[in-house]
Length: 225
Image (cartoon, rainbow, N blue to C red; front, side, top):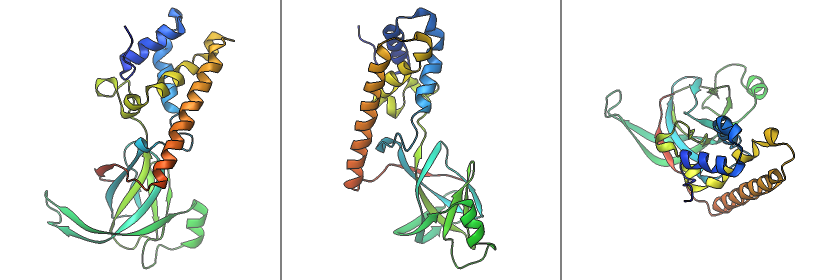
C-alpha cells in the first residue's frame, strides 16, 4: 500500500522505505527538520508562504509577527478610524488607502534620522525579532506582508502543514538529500537533488506567474506586537 505523503507519519515511512537503511530510522526526524529549514526566501518563495497581518504601532520598536521569515512590504493604513477604542469589541475601519514605508539599513536609519522627529514614519529596519520605525511621531496602524515559516510538521496538528499537503515532494526529496553524509557515494543522491531542484524551480516560477497576475495573499489577521 502506498504511503500518504501528505502526513508526517506517511512521509517518514516513505523516507524509510526509500533509503532501505534501518540503521538510519532514528535520524529521519532530523532529516525532515533539516529539509524544513531549507524552505526560506529567496530560494523558496511560493505563494502559500506569503501572508499579511495588521497591527497597531504605538512605539518605535514593534515585535514581528509569529513565524516571520522575511519582509515583502510594510504600509501605513491611511484613513482608518477606531470604533470602541480600548474595549473588547474594538474595531478598526479602514478605507483601503496605503502609504508605503520603505526598508532601510541600520546605518541609513541612524544617518537620516539622528533624532526621532518628523511629520510621519518613513522607513523601517529589522532587528532579531523587532521592526524599528523611524521617525516614530504618532501611533498608526500598519499592514505587513511577509514570508512566514512553515509550521513544523513534527508538531503540527495531524502531522501536516500547508506545504506538505500541497507539495509533498519538497519534503520527501529535501529529506532524502539530508542522508547524503550517511550513505556515501550512493547514485540516488544526484537523482534526489535534481528532483528537488526541479520542483523548487517550478514552484518559484509558478509564484512569479501569480505575481504577474497581481493575485492577493492570504490574511492571517491582526496581531499584538
